[in-house]
Length: 354
Image 1 (tube, rainbow, N blue to C red):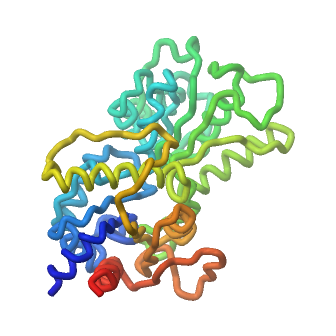
Image 2 (image 1 turned 60 degrees about the vertical axis):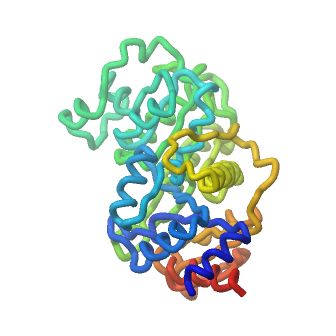
């Protein structure tokens, strides 16, 4: 019965996008029903992707971990991290300041960025740039590298890949960059402006996220608020003109839609082992969609659900993460509210079989 239902659902050209933290995993532990939900879709060849505001690692690493944790084969081409759309900026910027955990240097270089500077490289250049950094000398030497022309070549953009861990130092370094004179280290511009000296991108704006602790934790959105507040204080109250990716932005949903279409084509062609992926131009929506419905399954009304709603996808809000019953949803209108991801998938498949 379940496979008959799956086949009928697949023929309707539906697809799924799943958040990870709070939907499939809680910390590193699988959420009950997550493995079974993805197995149903995998066995029936219903296209699905994992669309998360998390990051800091390669898509292949995330896919490998989830495959093992949930006992479901996941291709790196099915994984969209918060910073995955940065791939579309490789030909736009030369030297970037890649902000985040130490791992983001490798991520940025794997995307094709040719000149990557991590914020710890700047701290290594001069410790008094951030005198109250929490990094020990041993940590700094481990995470950073010497950049010979760090103070003689301009930075073209700041890209925040994931939540950094040394917020005080990192905010100071970012502030220096976006208030510099033409992107040069050790300089400050004369004028005040809402437009930063060099563009700055945040890979998501989640204020809160769910991990293994029972209360929600601050995310990159909180870090962004601090950067924006301090920038405004330094620029006569003017608001920072920044760029944000991740859910709920249309830019990320457009990118995800392209990836879903590409994965569907691989399923139809029996070519899911391929590592070739056709990437869209950043900000370009698909010309047309083969899907009758796409369901976003998420735990955060302010990113997963509102993003899907604004984009025209349907949505399933689960109770296993950020969302709590009784919290007002206001203008957020999920297609359904369910207990967990397994209930979301089976509810959609049941509806499709009728």
